[in-house]
Amino acid sequence: MKSVVGLAAILAASVALPAHADKLDDIISAGKIRCAVTLDIPPNGFRDDKNEPAGFDVDYCKDLAKALGVEAEIVETQLPDRIPALMSDRADVAVASTSDTLERAKTVGLSIPYFVYKQVVLTRKDSGITDYAGIKGHATGGVAGTFEGIQWENDVKKLNDSSSTYRAFQGQADAVLAVSQGQIDATPLINTMAEEMIKSGKYPNLVIAGDTPYVPDYVTLATLRQEYGLINYLNLFINQQVRTGRYAELYKKWIGSGDPVDLTIKGVYR
Amino acid sequence: MNYTFHWAPALKAWPQLLWGAVVTLEIAVLSMILGVMIAIALALFSKSNSKLLRGINSVWVELARNTPALFQVYMVYFGLGSLGLRLDSYPSLVVGITFNCAGYLAEAFRGGLRAIPETQVRAARSLGMSAPKVFIFIVLPQLFRIVFYPITNQMVWAILMTSLGVVVGLTNDLMGVTQQMSVVTFRTFEYFALAAILYYALAKFVTLGAGVLARRLFQY
Image (cartoon, rainbow over all chains, first blue to last red; front, side):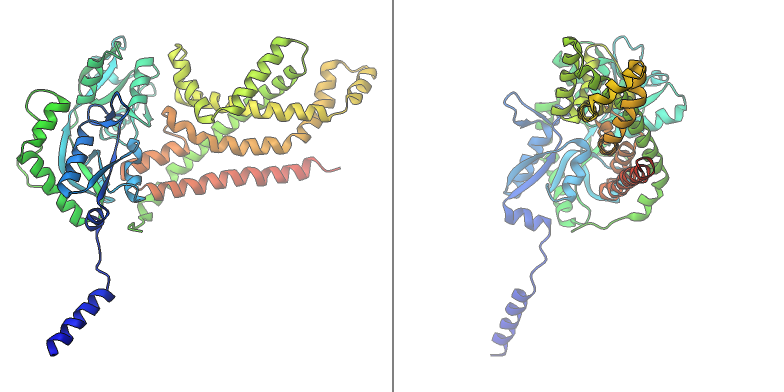
């Protein structure tokens, strides 16, 4: 009899005190994960011939949904808007090349790296810029809020020279268009996108003028800072993507031949 | 809401935001001065006998009033750029807002001109004043009194429209500074809230200032 009363008390308590559901619970019970994806950085995120979202990030989100046993919903966001999309609960996770800076980690929860970029200098053939140092004395620009844009702007400021300027655009397409038209002479660009664009033949006057001297740009999946359950899941998911060979498969499908880039950092744990 | 505001680091950026507000005001004032001058010309064009001048007026007014300001600013930068006419971000924004202001003000001025009785012009002419003198000393002062409030409205509009500078890469106006700060830190709400306060203060400053000015200028 005593145990029955005890059991009833426990049941009553569990009904009276609603269990605290975290984001991972919410996603599973909603049956849907909403990924903020940027669709102007081909081949990682773009719209295909049928105007459907496609690319590495889109497939990555679909894989994540599959692992969770839920549906994937792609929420298109401009690059500067992906974090506000998380904060305002329009998306659950940003699969949008979010560089893992310490400054940002104060605000959002970042997973282990799921991809890594090198940054190159994109310029016009007639600009006279042949390497990174050559941007001195030129009007340049990048995309607001990108890892490479922020570093480039800092370097331009360090030049302390009124003819070396920096403009921040809302999307990669605008920055590239501005280089192509000549409003600016060079922009930093992630290597995968620069190669894709030159291959596309849409911008015959553009060339890659070498690498930028930045450290590799490790990019992560981002969610709310306090969602440890989800961050934990994301970390394991990324690990599994590599372990199962799915990462290599996606790399080959979207980025190109050759070995997929190494996501580990030598000499330190994450 | 799952969000803890970090006001302390955001408030450290206050001086930069204030400088951004100065640049914003500068762009708005510059485009309003140019806009008013062009609007007077356009209003006169609309009364002209020349088909060409009337055509310029109506195309300008139609485009400026019936397309988004975002489109206008974007077209000045990227549209003219594709034709080989390259303007930097700052002048592009000034030209875009000037275009918009001139279109709206031209209509206000046209209405204002109609409100000034033709008999006054004829009386002044018959007293021996030349046509330009009549326009400057008889028509313009009254015109400005009539269109004073539309100008004030447009000035507030111009301040708010400067926020479109971000689409053409402007980084040193209030919106540009705000965005740069928020993308580096991801503290979007804090910086945008501070920016909103500054935009509000600028707009209020203009309307209150205009009110004081109106009381002084338009007393009979």
